[in-house]
Length: 113
Length: 118
Image (cartoon, rainbow over all chains, first blue to last red; front, side, top):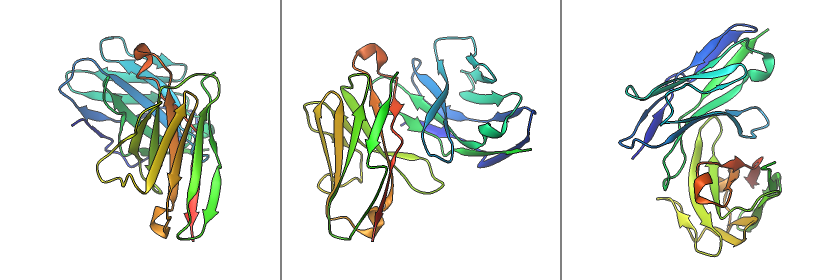
């Protein structure tokens, strides 16, 4: 079974600084998708970024970028120029076609003004 | 686009009663919908996968007779918590995957429903 591990229960960053959230996963598949979701206090799940495993290039969405290391099964999220609105729970997730979406335990990000 | 709604957003019910939660895909058709449960400060736990026109597939440990799922149309899935007890109190989230095999990896989440059983 696939597992997703987020080793940082909480992280803190100063506004305008950069922070990296870690995620590792375990799979025997070669074709899969990885995601970072944001869950703010409203608890609405918001897709931050998606990475297809067959793509070597790291995905980027504005201030959000990932470091995808397929061999190491690592998928970290970098948030640049952190803003107060970035404070939320962040979940790493894995998906293989035909299987369910598997979430990590989450990282609570606090942004200090 | 790709909006999913849930109703109600918050419900309180008495122990022993049943409560129904609706999940709707507003601007797309969803052959497959998913129901998650989230406890405070924890991750999402998949309860069941709902496929339009067929029986839901429940994850291990989820009581199918307690959590009834119906996916009668391509835009609506319902979760009924039967004979609710205080331990069923939780945050329930649905998600919907657009119809089409090539889009199976896409899931759009509803805003969630907070259930409190007294």
